[in-house]
Amino acid sequence: MVLGGKTRVVEGSVTPSYLVMIQFPSFEMAENWYDSNEYKDLKALRLSATTSTGVIMEGLPV
Image 1 (cartoon, rainbow, N blue to C red):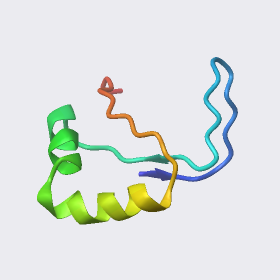
Image 2 (image 1 turned 180 degrees about the horizontal axis):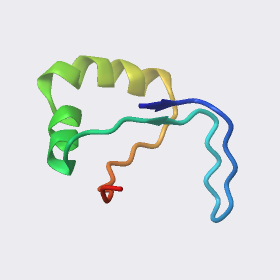
Image 3 (image 1 turned 90 degrees about the vertical axis):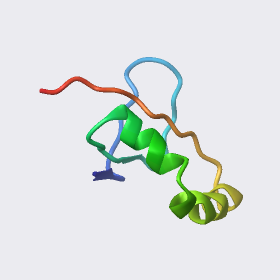
Image 4 (image 1 turned 180 degrees about the vertical axis):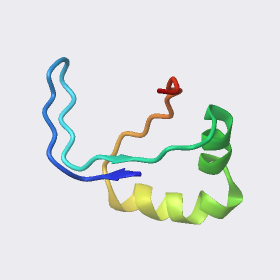
């Protein structure tokens, strides 16, 4: 997990004020977590209290 920290946008117009990145074993597991009943109530609370952008992105192993 990556939480907060200094950012510098070098291309485009994204202006993150607080960045959180969570790694999952697979794209499908990230989707399952986001759409899960267990996360549903917390997600609703988070969405009602913040203005945010969420992205699920597949990465390549390094």
